[in-house]
Amino acid sequence: MTRPTPTNHELTFEDNDFIVSKTDLKGKIVYGNELFITMSGYAESELLGAPHSLLRHPDMPKCVFALLWERIQAGKEIFAYVKNLSKNGSYYWVYAQVTPSFDKNNTIIGYHSVRRKPTSKALQAIIPLYRELLQAESSGGADAGKKLLNKRLNDAKKGYDEYIFTL
Image 1 (cartoon, rainbow, N blue to C red):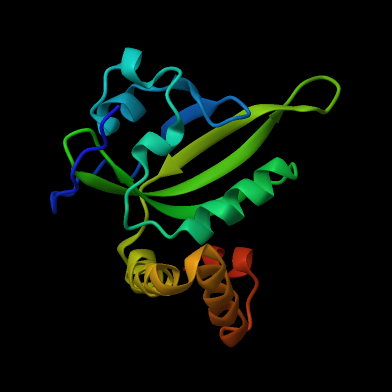
Image 2 (cartoon, rainbow, N blue to C red):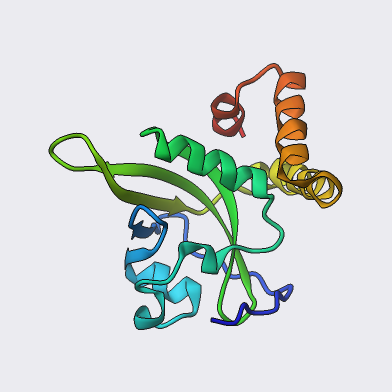
């Protein structure tokens, strides 16, 4: 599937709405609620079986997704601010809670994500941070982004979770 060209058009959703999706272990979409489908701009048939990364906006630092995958593959949840890309090139920000799904034997069988509308206060901190991380990654790869993220967290004297929860 051809990746859309990003535009400066922002999509929004209501404070009380939730975007929900589920993926298999490889990140392929197996479920999306109505709002997920609407915000993505794709038909449900285009989304099911497609990699969730289809919605990845190029403004998203690779190190954030590396951290996300590290956490969920280890059986832990993660909260993250994510800028998504719609089929028509529009973008939308979400505050995502991503959790592994387990079977009765406590084996991870997939991933579940619930996204809320982020606060403008949180985005005022996240947008410039992500720009810095992208800049670091452009010259030094994802490792440079991760190193800078860790430095920013150390400077703030907070771990990742504490930083995210206090925005």
